[in-house]
Length: 265
Image 1 (cartoon, rainbow, N blue to C red):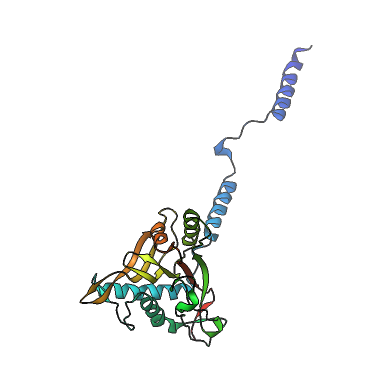
Image 2 (cartoon, rainbow, N blue to C red):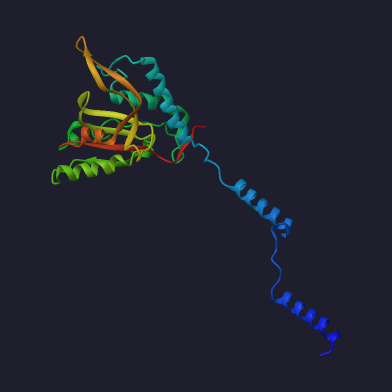
């Protein structure tokens, strides 16, 4: 081979190798426009993520009820309030009814905007049989102003074991949601019979508890008259609630505000 042909052959070989095995691209050699584009896309995705939902009229109604409960709790200042006579607002059901009636004027149901909202009375004793009085309310149609519906109910089943009834009662209490009105009959720390409360939070699976707003579950007699304690944001394990109403001929019901609560015009 002629000496002057060797450099030409070497050059051809190098060009062939560079085509088959291209040189690696260093980070500093990457396209800066592409990097900027990727960053801007990430930023755009973050900006488009939805924020918290706007409070509804239903939410506002619940907050008004809780706020008024806080006022009465603060006013009581830890002292027992008279809960003896029919008109005393610190009787358990009177308390929840009072909170509802004092805050309802601003709200209506979208389906029946001309109807003033009303809260049902407890079902009369004779109609509760064979269960004890106090586990539920009268049935009043939404068209008559009732903004609640029955969200869940537990009734002790004598055909099941105690353990089976407790499991059903636990499933019932796990359905508690913020703003639910609670009605039960049982044997509790401060009395025996009917009791009413309002739950201030959803059931919390981490603590296995709920938080309530209520009056007269704990009470005492002063000079022959019944006095009850006002409770606000009171946390209690659901098993303790279950111990109150998971008894023969007893039960409990959760009542929930309808979703179509609106502001009154």
